[in-house]
Amino acid sequence: MKVKLRCSVCGKKIKGPYIEDVNHKIYCSEVCFESQMPKCTVCGRPVSIGYTDEKTGENFCSEACWNAHLPKCVVCGKPVRKGYKNEETGEPFCSDACWNEYLPRCAVCGKPVEKCIYIEGVNKYFCSEECLKTQLLK
Ligand SMILES: [Zn+2]
Ligand SMILES: [Zn+2]
Ligand SMILES: [Zn+2]
Ligand SMILES: [Zn+2]
Image (cartoon, rainbow, N blue to C red; front, side):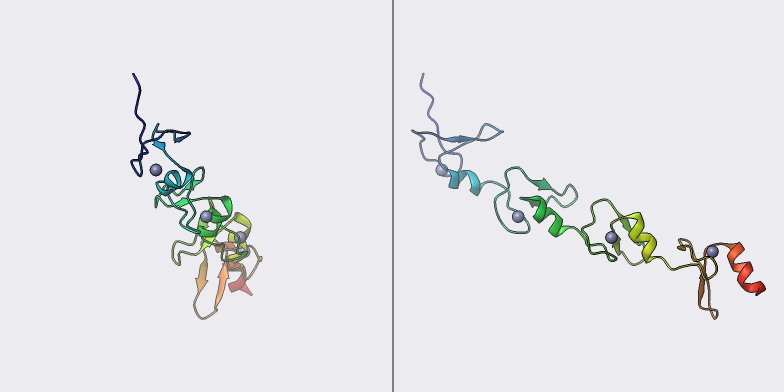
């Protein structure tokens, strides 16, 4: 028995060499093969082995394109993979270091203030009750 092969994109009969993908679909040419591949969201090139954003379903052809779509750290400008986000402003941060850099400093000890005690009027941040008391005692 002779199996008749047809390109799954254009339907042409395949006589010569063909391309088969992981799902056992066959294509008559590179052009047909690429036309059914997902396109890179950034540069529009067909994506064979690439990156997929699990959340949005977007495809990326290369690490460069993947990085290009990532949010940029508001402190250093590097692409943020797994990072931190300022819940209030939605600003992304690439690392602990950048997050800490972004945080306001305690007016007393100079440590980055995560959950800040902000005193209106005094216009200063304090990292802890202790630092706040120190300031008030001055
Ligand atoms: Zn074809
Ligand atoms: Zn691309
Ligand atoms: Zn950063
Ligand atoms: Zn402090």
